[in-house]
Structures are given as C-alpha cells and as structure tokens.
Amino acid sequence: MQEKQEQKMALLDKVLNTISEGVIVTDAEGEIIFFNEALENMEGLKSSEVVGRYLSDIYRVTPGKSDHSLVIKSGKPYQEQTITYFTAEGDEINLMASYYPVEHRGEIIGAFSVCRDFTRIKDLITKNMNLQRQVHAKEGNVKPLHNGTRYRLDDFIYAGEQIDMLINQAQKAALTDFPVLVYGETGTGKEVLAQGIHNASARQVEPFVGINCAAIPETLLESTLFGTVKGAFTGAVDSQGLFQQAGKGTLFLDEINSMPATLQAKLLRVLQERSYRRVGSTRELPLECRIITSTNVDPHECIEKGTLREDIFYRFAVFTLFIPPLRERIKDIEELITHFINNFCRVYGQVSVKLNPELKQAFFSYDWPGNVRELQHVIESSLVMLNPDDKELTFEHLPSYIRPKFKQQTSHYVKYTAEGNSLNQVLRNTEKQVIEEALRSHRGNITRAAKSLGILRQNLQYRMRKLGVKAE
Image (cartoon, rainbow, N blue to C red):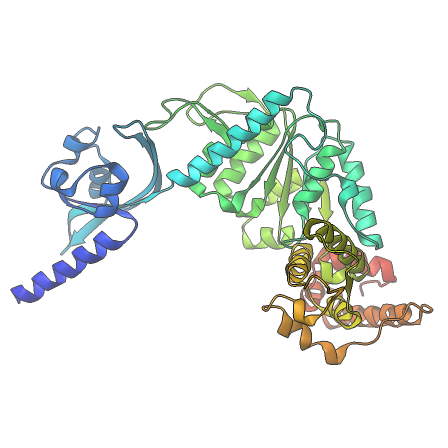
C-alpha cells in the first residue's frame, strides 16, 4: 500500500513539474509544501529554498492575510487575479493567478494556486503603444496615413451598389463625432472602414489607435484601455491607456462583443460622462477621442446571447454600418481579382497575368468564408506558384487546401456572358421567390427568415427593399 502511495506521489510530482503553469501548495497554516519548476522559472526561486517555509517568509504578505489564507478561511476559490511584481534584477513579471482551497473529509487542509505568465503579452502591448506614441511625437503635424492608418475610404475596391451605399453612409458618419458600430464577418474590411472614416473626418491629423478586444486577456484589458498609476497593485507603474494614447483622434475597439460585460459597463460610463480614471487613480481624465467599435456577429444576436449589453449597443450604434460578406457581392469579386492580380504582379515582378476563364467562374461560385482577406490570400499564393513564362492562373496554381473545393464546383458552372440582362433578371426573380418563400414559411418573421437563409437580418431587409418584397 505504501509503495502504491509513493508511486502515485511520484506521478503527481512529475506531472506538476512538467506543466507550463506555476503551482504552489500550502497547508492550512501557510507552510509551503510544494513549489513546481514552472514557478521556479517565473519567480527566480528554487523549490529547495521555499518548501518548508511560510508564505509570509517568502512574499510581502502579513501572516494570515495571504490569498491562500483568504480562500482557506472562506472555503471559496479566488480566480483570475492579476499579479505584477519586479524580480531582484528589476524585470517586471505579470501573472494571472487562481487560488483554490483543498478540502478533505469535511475539513479544509490547505490551498494551492495556479499561475500563468502574461509578461510577454503585456510587453508586446506596451511596445506597440510606445512605438505609436513615438511616431506621433516625432511627426508633430501628422498628415493623413501617417497617423497609425493605411487606408482611406477611396481604397475600397468595389463595383456593386452595396459598397457604394456603404461608403456614402461612412462619409456621412465621418462628418460627425457620433460613435460608430461596424459589423460584418471576419475579413470583410471592418478596420479598413474604420480607418477610412477617421481619415475622412476632422480628426484625420490625430492618432488612430486600434485594438482587438478578443486578443487581449480579460485581466489585462482594463489596464490596457484605462492605463494605470503607480501603486494601483503590486509593482504597478504609471502607464498610459489607449484612451489617453488616442488623444483627440479615434480609438477602434474591434470585436467589442468579446469584451467582458463588467468592462462594457465601465465603458458605457466613460461614454456617458466623457471622462475616465486610470486603474488605481481617483483623478478624472477627459475623454477626447472618438470611439468606433465593431462586431463580427449580428449585434442583435450578440444581445440575445448576452455577449453585448443592450444599453451599450444603443450608445455605440448611433451610426450602424454593415459590410456585406463577399459571397453576396458578386459584382465586387471581379474588381477585387483585377486589383489584387495587378498589385501582386508589381510586387513579384510578374507581367500581364490573367485568370483562366474556368477558374474565374469558380471564383464567382465559391462562398469565400474568409471574405476579401481570403480572396487576397488565394490570389497572392497562386501568383507565387507561377513559372516565369506563365501568363495565366489556373486551378493548378491554387493553394492545396482550396483546390479540391474549387474543382468540386466546376460541374455546376454556367459560362458567363455579358450580353443582355436576361441572366440578371433570372437571378433577380429567383432571389425574390426564395425570399418570399422564406418569409411565408416563417409567417413574416424577418429574423427567422434571415437565419434560415444563412444571412443577417439587416442584409435581408436590404434585399427586400431592393426587390420590393414586403413581409406578410
């Protein structure tokens, strides 16, 4: 029995010393009984130096007041807490820790914590913010496209009415300071549109700062937005947040539906009061920047699922701009193909490359789940595969992952013709019939009809207006 117990302990010891998270275990009095290798690397301490000693001997905590003591007393876990401190060499360490009590036979016998090191992520965010701040400081009177942006509204490539209408709406939004909510699938160009609005506005000489809310850990997002003051938490230093970095320019919050609800509530207060506080500060700072947000999911669906607060939606959606997916913009595909081929031919030294007619038709029939970004990638990857003497892109030049999907559709292709409008009329009538049938099947409920057709509610409403279809 003892041998079995020793084997079990050896296995657990090996597992806990192999994982990348730091683990520390204490008994009910706070004596350290386990300290794994990952935590040794994070904190620069050796297990042999700390095991057998109390938490208060190793860390700056009062006996009985450590996080381990708190969870032992309350009997409840204490999760996702940010810890920042400095090593003896002066390096800043950022951890996210969760604390758990351990119960045995109805009695709490100790506690353990699990730590993840987010120092590298925090460093990347800080470096990015510092670089942008240095650029703006050096340039003084910043000119458009030297303000953290690359795009204007003129950079949208399109031929259809949908994007033409969108650009017209964006130009109107640029003339105001109202918040803007942009929504569309991944790869449709939400940040391009946000940058275009900024560069068409009176704020164009000011910074444009963008951040993807889904890419930043929840525990770092608040300090990234608001900034921190020295002493706000262990090791905290004075740092600017994105509100302050954006200055009188524009702050773009991409995928705001990924932001925690508690932080959305704080953001709502900032918008209402036009002021904010750094984390750990009592001083109010004025909010001078304009805020543009985006979602990659229909905002009404986000509200239903609870990922977007309804009150913040109405606050942000003074201007709501919808970017249709590429599969619903057939006219734009040809314009984009021509643009990307010409652009990448210049980059890779190709001359007069054309798209094989059959492949071109396949481009029109493909769904493009990655939208414009995927189309750009496919064309660039295909051009790289051309031989020096090749003048035509064919199926064989396509990336291997997408080639089978395109070839499966060739049997359904109809030769494209520009003669007359008969095909357009047939497609228009067919689309109208499908929409009318979907509405009938769902008793005029536009939301359910849109879901059955696999499109957004707002897009269905746009098509109904365009085709003269009325809900029953």
